[in-house]
Image 1 (cartoon, rainbow, N blue to C red):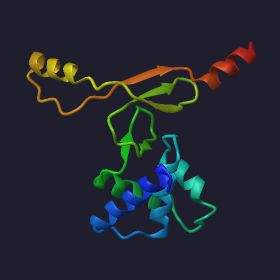
Image 2 (image 1 turned 180 degrees about the horizontal axis):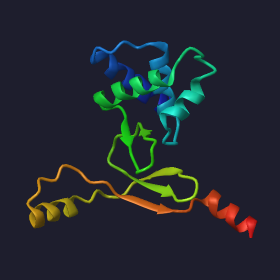
Image 3 (image 1 turned 135 degrees about the vertical axis):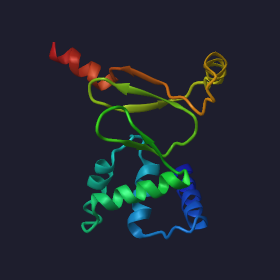
Length: 149
């Protein structure tokens, strides 16, 4: 069993333990999220599964994503544009985002716990979490810029 198959089985078990019924559509949405390294929008997921499930609606995808979020299987990423992206990697990690095409890539770096502690001391806030994003141009967009000049 591959790592992604094992993660999928663990996620399905977690859903069952939470009392969530595993419909074919729900299984497909979860499997798609577990197998992609992208950070898809609900519309991306819908388009990828549309041919396999022609009667499935975008609302079904959103409803499933909401269920996955509530159980802790998926995180919603919002970056100021109108479409949320979804990440099934719920471990603490950061993202680098392409300014040109919007591609989002995970990267791991030690968490900034000291920054959170300092923020609490300086402001008196009870810090619950933080988010760090790094922006730039991905390799594909850099290559297309070089070929267009």
